[in-house]
Length: 176
Length: 166
Image (cartoon, rainbow over all chains, first blue to last red; front, side, top):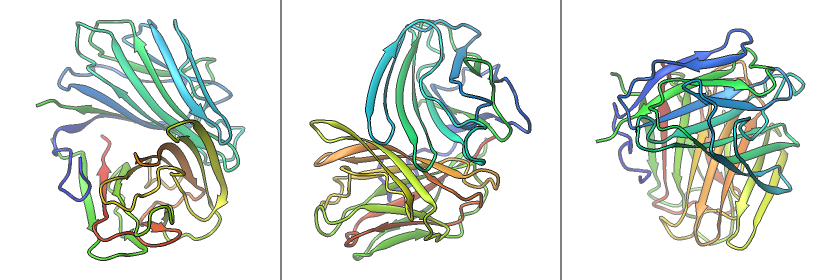
C-alpha cells in the first residue's frame, strides 16, 4: 500500500454489511446473519457507555475465549496485561459522567471469520480522549471456537449499555 | 454493490511545502482514512501536525503510546492547537522511510466531538499508536497536515479515503 497511488482497496472488495446508529440508549448491539461472502470482517465504531463499564464482544452467542492480551497507555504510563476465560474486553470508554459529546472509538479486525478449521483471533485498536486524560489500547483476543462467525453481539460487562449516537458499522473484506 | 472504500484526493508535493490541505470534503462518508507518506527536509527538525476546518484554537488533545526501540513510553498533549500522533515516529528526511495512517471516525456527524486514531511508523526512530480529539461538533470539511518546524520534502504524498456505512 503506497499513498499517492490509486486506491489500495479495489472498490467492491471492502463492503458495508450493516450499520447500527442508536437514537436512544440500548443494552446491546447485534449484527446477525453475517454472510460467509468475505474473508475478514472489520467493525468501526464510536461509543459512549451508560456508566463505568467495559465492552464485551460475543460471537454466535458463545462466550468462549481462550486468551487476551493488551498494551495500553494513558499519557504517562504504559501498561500491559492479559487474561483468559470469558469476560470483558480491555479498555474503558467515555460515559455520561464525562464531558458531553465525547465518544470513544474502536476499529476491530476479525480475521478468517468463516474458517471452520481454526480458532478466531481478532484485534482491537481503540481509545478515547478527555483533554487531560485519555487512553490508547492495542489488544488481541482468541475466541475458542472453530465455528464460522455468523453473529456478533456488543454489550457491556456490567450492563450499563450504550447511549444515543453510539454507532457501530460492520464491513466485509473479500479475498481474491 | 457500490464502492464502500473510495479515494477522495491525493496530493504529491512537487516542491517543498509547509503544509498540505484537503478541503471541501463532502459528508458522503462515515469515516475518513488519511494515508500520509511524509518526509521532512531536515531530519529531526519537526513534527507532522493535523488540524480540522482551519481551527487554530486550543481545541485539540491527544494521547500517545510510543516504542523507541529500547523502551515504551506514553505522552499527551492537552489544549493544543493541533493533533500530533507522533513523538518518535516523526517524518524521516528520506522519502518512504516513514508513514502515518489517521482514522477519523464519524467525521460528518454534528453531534459528537471528533476523535481519530493514528499510527505513526518511522523505523529509523520509532513508532506510535495514538488517539486524538477535536473538541468541536461540526462536520469535518477540511484537514490540514503541516510541519510545526521546517518543511515537507518534495515527493511527500498524502491520500484521503472515505468509507461509507450501510
